[in-house]
Image (cartoon, rainbow, N blue to C red; front, side, top):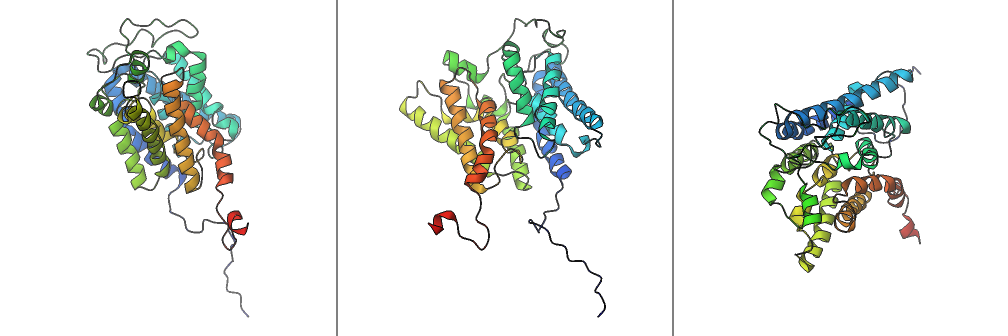
Amino acid sequence: MPASGKTLEIRTSPHILSGNSVDTIMFNVVLALLPTTAFAVFAFGLAGLLTLSVALASCVLTEHLICRASGKPTTIGDWSVTITGLLYGLVLPPALPLWMVAVGGVISVAMGKALFGGLGYNTFNPALVGRAVLQAAFPVAMTTWIPGFGPDRFSSLPSSTLTLPFTQPTVDAITAATPLAAWKFGGETTATVDLALGFISGSAGETSSVLILLGGIYLVARNMMNWRIPVAIFGAVIALSGALHLADPSSYASPAFMLLSGGLMLGAMFMATDMVGSPMTARGCYVYGALIGVVTVVIRIWGGLPEGVMYAILLGNAVTPQLDRWFRPTVYGTRSKEAST
């Protein structure tokens, strides 16, 4: 009997592929971030441009050098480190000294990504790892903000931007509090329209909530983002902050303020949804998102810092493996533990 000439291949699931490769998905995430990045440069001028450029360059260069040192082909062409660099730059104060920006970029890739084994193995969001280290090492510089839309933002730089390494930055006389800091420490609220459109002070990418939301919707429409995670985050924030606001409007901010201020929108759309650091199951994603939302509100209201998104997402990343164990799907053809008991 003649052989058919065909080989039977036995593979694990998934057996039906979408056709989207890693670099295609990562490139689309970069596209979704471009409007927010462009708005950050428009709002903060040269300071925003240099901060984002140094953040991106330090991350890409670190990834390339680590690949070369380990004898592996460079992976900068898959766009993953470009996302890390953009997100890292977007969560930094625009007036941060550039040498600090570069140090954080190296830490983001070397400690937050390469140390765990590279793309697909990092436990924590690399951009937030770099920011967390800078927050602990340089707390004053990381909480110094400049107002956006200054008349000379494209012709001059804040004095702190070009500070020499390991020297004390000189802070300009003109600084501004973020909406969260103004509310937490001064009881002042910011107009919802200003929060949504980005006419506020803050990190480079925390300003225009509308553009961030549109970028997230684009990825959801392309089926490149798990929509359950931001929905769960927003739902938890609305539920908890709404209940507190109804109980005492004079002491607790409204849900709209909590949603649109700080880094919640950027974190929920582009950081918490990291495919590696988030759960694999739908139920796990809902619990993961709810945890991030609750922790964010708790830190903002009762914590010592006005913002808690970074720590909430890192905590969510840490519990993701356990959530995957708790909400492990039932193997086809078997019964769940609950049904068998």
